[in-house]
Length: 257
Image 1 (cartoon, rainbow, N blue to C red):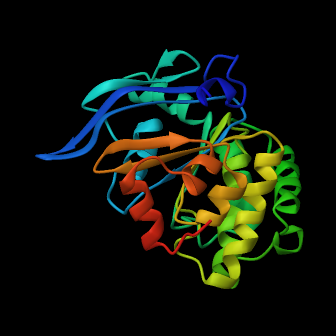
Image 2: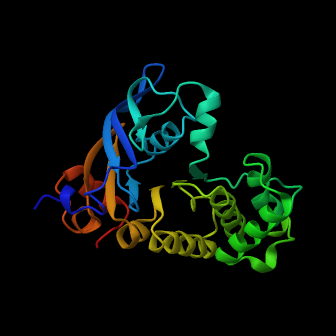
């Protein structure tokens, strides 16, 4: 069976295409000719050992890192090389990091409303209405006036997700969004992400949460040493991996299906 043709929205143009992407840090090859596509409404999980290039790929996606070879296409167009045009493109991609990066002196509501006001020029009242709606969406309607220091890690990360959604992005990029969280708050963040997936948001998720990847991903990509060693639907990757290194990696994590 050709798994590629069975992918979600495989009959439509891909939202993101990585074509032979290379990224170097001095002599270190962080990405070694990565070619990949992300379809509309698809949840793609990137898994693999730490340092294998997953987060670097995300950071190249919205030009937080420059690339040293190949290209990234968003809706068929290469990422622009000048910063002013790239800022416009970046607005179409929401990014959620390991660290929440909220403004500590602003309430949850103001953290979420700030982007639409400062970047999109949205009127303050309209932006605050949008922010309240999004805080409700992530289960934090009652925390609108709370400051980050008074929120748990899981709550702060949900505010960060709401902040990214406030820009109405086309694609959401998640860089190990639960790795800095206490175990008891991981589930609430993954629950919000699962809801976004159900709603059809295009998502690329770098994660060590294998249960989430198995349950929510449409497509799983396994990285090692800056290269893709295997990709496919979660049933194949987790239950019938074809590459020994994938089996080793999952085995080390105690994954047994």
